[in-house]
Image (cartoon, rainbow, N blue to C red):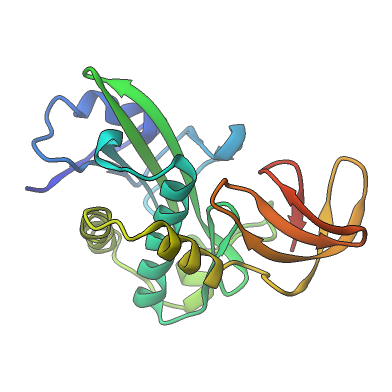
Length: 237
């Protein structure tokens, strides 16, 4: 049964979806809009979209249905979105740790996964913002859209329907922990390439080697291999 709800406008689909849980009949309840006015990104970052050009999409799933860790759930979700866009666009698509999606060098998707209690159940709320038709990103030099990166004008509603179906199918069949990690690292943005990183102390060159199952990123810096959690280091690109 499809539980895919549409709302013309809202502040944040990750917040609004909670009241739609009462009406859902399946294990995959989703809410989307093409006009989100106050979306959130990871760790308090904002995620705003231009009306009728981009997608704000949230999916609520009962966390008890998943026997993997929060970090692996995050990685697997990012891999699903990466695979979906790679198939849709036939373009190079990568995952910028921990869960931004990069198409041809530009950030096109932001993902925010939160755990919330509602209706006496614990849910993963998967928030996905996809830039689809937007053409100008004057204030964010490393952002792009599916249109700017591929030249394809996707139909917003068709893409949303396909995204929902893909998430339901893939989240209904969780692979092993080892396969999740292998696939995530296979498509890791800037892996094994010299990149510039910024910490609270300095800026230096380094090479991303791998992400681990605890949610840390391992980077070979000038003084050796080190691990970092999100926000402890910034990749400049």
